[in-house]
Image 1 (cartoon, one colour):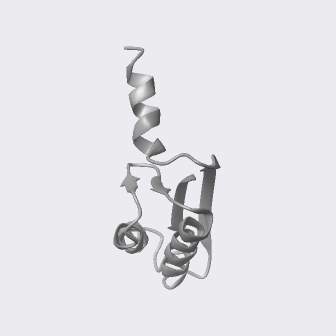
Image 2 (cartoon, one colour):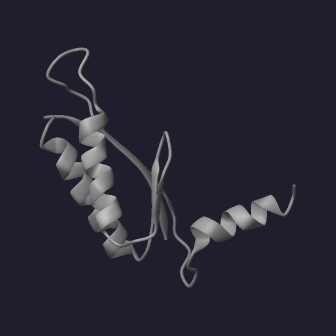
Image 3 (cartoon, helix red, strand yellow):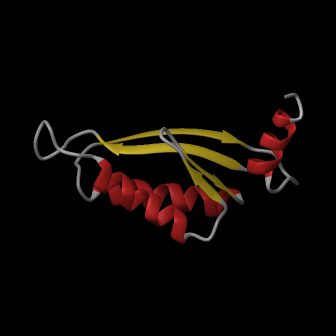
Length: 98
């Protein structure tokens, strides 16, 4: 499965506080998981089996919760049994049309 998720604090110490430090901690957890992943300006993608991917999302969310009493989590999943490396395969399939 592939999960695209975004996690961020919704409450910060001051109205102008940066959220990037909390988000960076979440991304660190994803990168250290050993699962295939990519981060862009809006989402982080993680690929693997259900339990391992959802565990990474849970740990990343809890890391953000360490600095904020309220957390926003947006999650989209592509669940397709028997397929691997779909983060790259989907892009290769798309690029064939250009």
